[in-house]
Length: 432
Length: 119
Image (tube, rainbow over all chains, first blue to last red; front, side):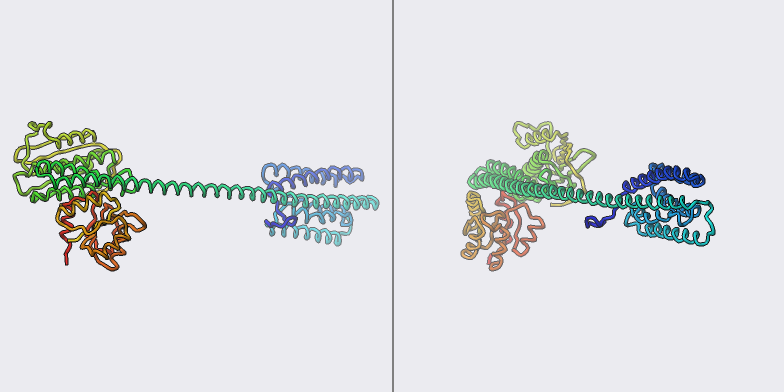
């Protein structure tokens, strides 16, 4: 499609169909008028041919309406060529029927797109061949099949000349009108596109501003979160530090142990907090590295006891939500602390095994030590904060728990709970 | 052994200083930002630095140690749980003794300080 206004020749399918219809109606009307003319002259054979031509063009309109415009178009080209040859053969070259051929270039341009160059070439060539054919027929034909008086021949000549001239003008007008319509359509489309482009640019600009604003808000949120995290972490560190300092000034061993336990509980929460802040989504934490960290500082806090306690872990790659991670971590802290405090009080070495695995929709914590064990039925919960806390955290997790312990045979604790936000990838065995 | 504490929280500075002194080490200075930390290292020549990752001013703990390591290869204990690959890579040129999560317990410090060879 060329953009230069007035030089555009673009025919849409609809425009071609419309042109075919108009042309066919024009030919059919001309044929009816001609029938009267030739009937007046007594040329009934020509009238018969004209009836056939008129009917054919009406059929082309029907074909057109059935969406066979290409067939219709080809039929028009063939029929006009054949029509000119037949009429020339009947009435002779001098009847002026060849004048119609001068209108054919405009007709061709109206029936075809500029891109259909080969079809246009074939079409024009066919009209040229027709012109040569009727000239040769006239040259080699001794006499026309139908005898026409000179006065009638003059009338036919003038009629053909006039009608073909009018037809040419009509087609030229069509051609110009179509081109103007296409140009107007293109101008309208261009204007519409420009409007759309302006609107789109405005929209992009607005979106860009919103994006900038969102990025700024997100950055502010991140800074705020980082600041809150930093303050929480430092406040926990201050509380823990103050408790730790207190332990240096307490002479009573029991009081010192209580302070250390409290300090460890704070550390359990602080490490958990840190892990959550580290995690990318702030919703879940990967529990294995947390347990390793927990074991490390609990072991260190009991290092003064100088006992060889081996802690073996088998932790699957499980992620816990904050709601579950906090009671879980404090519960594990109590279990390990209890073992250190009570299970190995008469031994210099021992072992603890911790496994945390997923079984179907349940997470199972199994904690085992080979310490002195205890009679579960005789544990007085009123006197044991550790046992109370374990029970409370189990309740918070909505977990099922079992204790198996006998004096001198170690202790085994199992905890099972459900969590929706869990993900299992694999597991790692580790000895601490 | 001489310890330099770099911590942006003043109260934590005091608590850590007291804890470290109570377990038998000397705290040569407590500072709250990277620039002061660099100056303190030049001035007091500590044997080990207890470095918080987040500090006042433009330099964070790792940036500060990267500056310090240019003139003194002092062992450092970073106070963060975030010992991920990014931080490890950033701190690769520094003499890392360990990464600790706040609140750091004196038992942890004892273990880490024991690794420092005092000249």
